[in-house]
Length: 487
Image 1 (cartoon, helix red, strand yellow):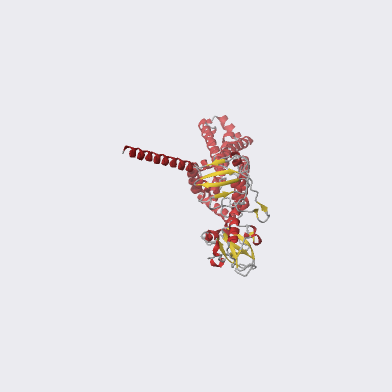
Image 2 (image 1 turned 120 degrees about the vertical axis):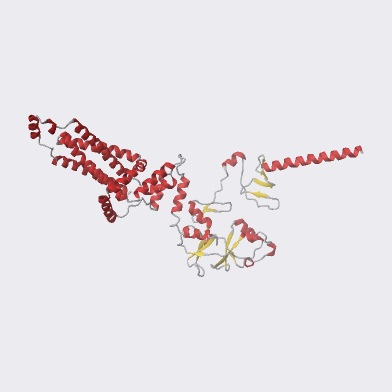
């Protein structure tokens, strides 16, 4: 943004400078011969050596046209090339269309030779052309204000406004096509332009593309939000991108579950039937284990999957099972750092402690799910969650699916126990129970309404196969019976 402002200011200053120099050049320029001498010579009759011939007039008018076009060429390229952001050009090189990649590569190759060198070359060429134009017009019009006004009008209209307007719209394509010509002029102007560009680089520093800070990036992402445009960003995408940018500044203390809300076990707890059922009802896959019931010193965590083959009648203590390591971290740890730690596969849970590695001091528990929630900026509520937001104690409001209600009317959710022997799954309501049969599901509505049957295609195919097998068996029996009668 800063470089663009500098370039626009330079362009405006060049216009003012050219107008002033055109005025001064025409004011201090003198005709080849005074009007009185021309009149005297004309009176004598020596018209072959004193009057401007038609051929000279045509040549000078041609020079005026060429100078105006060259002035527009340099002025347009000054704004077109200097107005292109290097960061945007690099984006086009990697993700643009085929033509954009080609044009951006050419322009970058030119600017990488020295952006100030290109700028000084174009400005110097533009000044030379625009200062030559009033001199040529002076020889045609005889000097005076008419030459000043005409040169000013030609420079402003055809040498500045029109070419710069075109190059603002098609700056990349025009700059790419004209880059070889600009490169040749750069080497022609090298004795003057290169030292000047070196001084500019020394005092102003090297020119870079626009670099956005996080606040600017979030604003830039928000500006690209458009729900109607296919290429635009949706509201969820914008929200997730902003959350990712804030992940480094977010600490684990803001995402952890307070220790008083954490389900824990003691190292000497007996895993009887009641305790195992309590573990299953809570639905956690990892449970922190502390040294004793009243202790704040956590020594590891129990993986619930290790209880799959456990017989509750054995009534073994937690100490009988192998505990996984439970790392500790400080509350000031960044969520991005703890995410990188979790990605190493050593653990998906950590204790947030005021004195990591010391005795006690546990403040809460941070898990991979907590970090992912901070990563996407939204809460992840599964079937066993009680709170949507643990810090604010916002409980889960399990609203029935409206689409499911349109298919199965009068559904009420209940919480009957899970019968694993009969393969009966229950949802949290009164009145609906799902009984699994193979790959099918029969939904019983016990709320007084009619029952609805949901069966998968696999179950229907299985029933058809069973019917075909039964028919084949019946045919075999009939065949055997008829053969016995014949015997």
